[in-house]
View 1 (cartoon, one colour):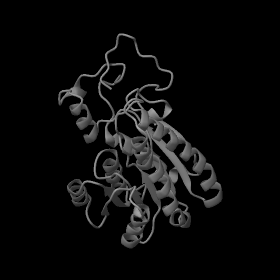
View 2 (cartoon, helix red, strand yellow):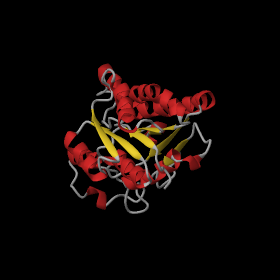
View 3 (cartoon, helix red, strand yellow):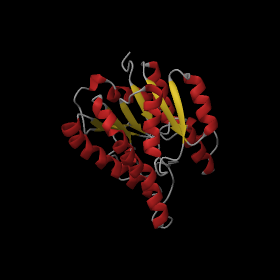
Length: 263
């Protein structure tokens, strides 16, 4: 098993990509700290993984002291911490007209500052085991969609954080920091978002080929499979890297002008 006996803290792991990563980590021999806001979803995920393999912490990651409490949860339950996955994020639509300063600050608090705070809280324990951090970003970090302004900026900032700490923490503390940028993924929250936009429940079954050359968008389990490489020892000394996970070249791609879009 690729993660045998490792202890991994995964934020936002009661649903979607985070849940898929947690499930795959346990399959690979790890024990995990689950985290989220949804008590019912968290309880279901914990029951699925087993209380011998996972513990659950429900709390807003921007709350004062939340990063320290999450790290303490790992230490109390399993005695150590080998890896941190910063997956929790607020995926929310906005543009320059709808983004006021309070809203912008809140998005940055959740998507950028909280991951930084978690890295700081976890660092002494990751250093003991020459552990690693995996940040879950988004291809929108490169510029983003017109209606994802604040979210895209927050993910761009996270990408710079990864590059910066991936250098300094690796050299000074022996802790690797890397990032994966998922593209369009069929998560529970994405289903809800598109329903709120007025689309039918089966919108994902008929997508423009320009956005889904394979005929579908990505599945959470496919992102989880990629995450394992960065959490495992097999990625060796690689640090400070950002990898896009999408089914087409994202940067510099020019869709046909007459292509309809639902993104």
